[in-house]
Image 1 (cartoon, rainbow, N blue to C red):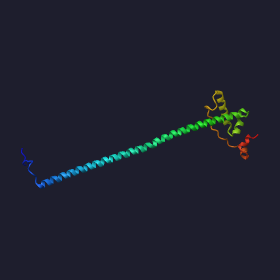
Image 2 (cartoon, helix red, strand yellow):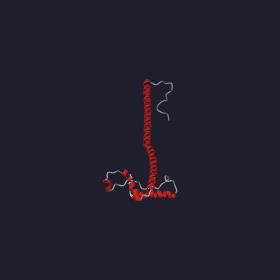
Image 3 (tube, rainbow, N blue to C red):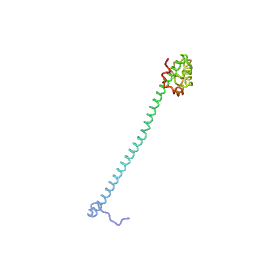
Image 4 (cartoon, one colour):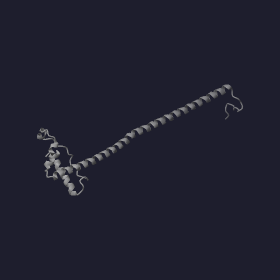
Length: 170
C-alpha cells in the first residue's frame, strides 16, 4: 500500500529548518557516541589500573613468603653449622675426660676436676671407650653425651675463695 506521504526525490532540496534540525540531531548522536567512547576508555583504563594494583598486591604478598623461605634455609644452615661445631667440641670434651681418666683418676675425680656431675663424667668416659672400641677416629661421629654444664659449687667450695684454677695446682 502506498504511504500517505509522497516520496521525495533526491534532488529536491530540504527546507533550511529541516536541515538544521537534522544536523543538530546528528551532532547529538555524534556527541553521545563520543561520550560513550570516552566512558569506555575510562572504564578500560580503570580496569587496567585495578588489575595492575591486584598484580602488585599479589607480588607484595608473595615476596615475604619467598624471603621467609630463604631465611628458613639460612637458619637451617646456621643450625647445622652450629651442630657440627658443637659435636666437634663435645668430641674434644670426650678426649679431655678420657685423658684425665687415663692418668689414673676416678670418675669422681674427673667430675670434680671438670666441675661436672659424676654422671656427666661417666657419660664422657663411656663415650670415649665406645669411640675407642669402634675403632673410628675420635673426632668423627662421637656419641652425643648430655650437654655439660658446670655443677653448682658445694657448700665447702662456695665458702672457699679459691677459683677452679687452683684444682690443677700441685
